Image (cartoon, rainbow, N blue to C red; front, side, top):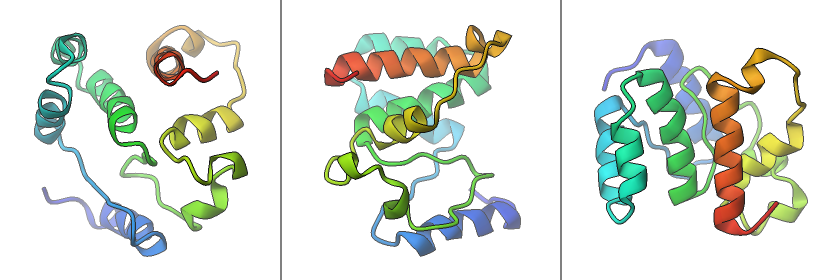
Length: 139
């Protein structure tokens, strides 16, 4: 997949600051294949993902599914990395980065009393955090 130069620059910031990490770009087609391959044993997840017709909601879900399956850090194409990832991992997660994204998001999470709390990406985020918490037996 060919991406715009400014997006390519931001991608390089991640690779330059943490070259030992794997970087993977999931296009719509690659994301579908990812779900079918990695969640073949859980028809609930496959059916939920395949049943979403809105590509934005699919993109929201694939990031949580990738973090659930792979661990690590997720960033959109429009997000560059300005300092090494190791500098912003909370100390209690240094040796266990499986749930790093949830940990850093929850560390910085500030509840808002807006419509976005119960709809759209915020509702999906809260549901994903609850699922990850239940699946990993954490709070």
